[in-house]
Image: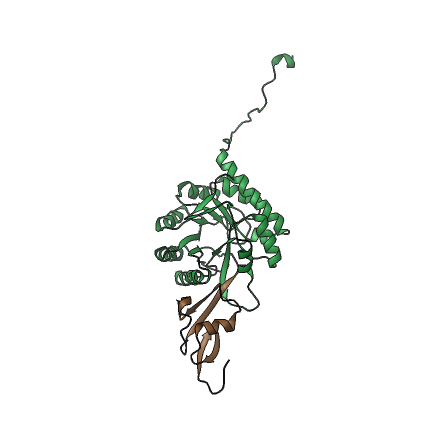
Amino acid sequence: MDEPLRIADRVFGSRLIMGTGGASNLTVLERALVASGTELTTVAMRRVDPSGGGVLDLLERLKIGVLPNTAGCRGAAEAVLTARLAREALETDWVKLEVIADERTLLPDVTELVHAAEQLVDDGFTVLPYTTDDPVVARRLEDIGCAAVMPLGSPIGTGRGIANPHNIELIAEQAGVPVILDAGIGTASDAALAMELGCAAVLLATAVTRAGDPERMARAMADAVSAGFDARLAGRIPKRYWAQASSPALPSAVVD
Amino acid sequence: MIRPWEALVNLVVNGQPTEVADGCTTAELVERLSARRTGIAVAVDGEVVPRHAWGTALRDGAAVEVLTAVQGG
């Protein structure tokens, strides 16, 4: 891809942002991350556990930027505290802001999300909010000062693709900050569609980490994001009702 | 290390009731929980304790959260 992705003050060659959740082990995760070509990858903040860890060392070794999230947080106060802890632990003021309404759908609680985003922007964070596919909420988040908006395609981990492509297109069309399709990607064509609709990047995890062959799926996603981005910039043909011949008409002499 | 003649303070560390020696600092508690020094953050009673303040002793009754980055998102 010719044009790099710009978010706030950083530039990325890859338009695929990865998550690290769901991988069966760090070796599988490493192969998938390398195959994806990603330059920015999310991690969650949790209580220390002597048996856990290792993901930070892996990302450091692969020279992949760390994007802490506030996954699992249920209200603005909890999300803001988690973001502040992540900033302290990881020495980054970037945060994927996630405020969840309930465990069954994991849908964003947008009123709490907006409150948390306001506080974190005021506090100097670079806020990348995970939100619904509502164009009005997306605009509101941009107005607050978020560095990107990250609407869902469909709920986290469902792999149902982009449920409302029209809304994603509306969000991308009106946004002055990068729109990153986050959640719901199931396979490569979903990622390509996100880019064709005008998204600046795609964030996914489950579709790769829980695929039969995560490394191969990661490569497929990278190709899909590139292909979709080029297709968007190339300008697709309009859809027509009737066929339009792509070969010159036969001279009548041949028919006679 | 807790010696029987030392005074103790009671904390709640990551949800678990925990006794530490009086004067135990945030840094000492972190050392007890993790081999890592980087990638860790601490909150006491819902407020982030910046790394430069890890030398302060924890007071009795404090609720301490010690977090790190894990796979997720």
